Image (cartoon, rainbow, N blue to C red; front, side):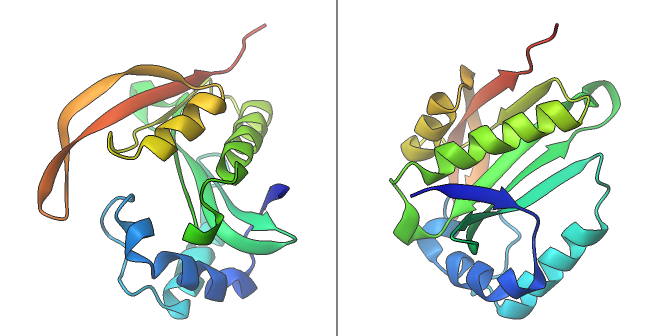
Amino acid sequence: MICKIRKWKLSDAANLAAALSNKKVQDNLRDGLPYPYTEQDGIDFISSMFSADKNDTFAFAVTIDDKAIGSIGVFRQSNIHRLTAELGYYIAEEYWGKGIMTEAVKQICEYVFSMSDIIRIYAEPFAYNTASCRVLEKSGFQYEGILRKNAVKNGKVFDMELYSKIRELS
């Protein structure tokens, strides 16, 4: 399957809601997303991406045949970390394990490094999410270490892993 990342469309809201109304998907994400996730929640999110600062927020739909199956974004940090950005992503469960997210991560990194002054992109997956860690490794991210007891999710304390990719400077 060949995936492409593209800007969000309001018509993606239903597919977004379908992907995020899965507890298995949400168990691998940060808190704050409604559950179940409605089409209106998707419209609200997509609308907020339309108005986000284009120099700080790089947010895209992950698509197969132009159908949104997930989300990927890189978010600039601030102050002394202003040339650093955090990566986040997910896809609908039925697309897991097919190499799609690896391709999407490669695409967004190439885009951000070529279209901005960001020099470092990092991600912090839960340590138990070995599939996400593998996506980062296959996308050229380097493992930097473990963030011990770094998150509370579903009432449990978890370690997270730290990965980064550095833009090649000429």
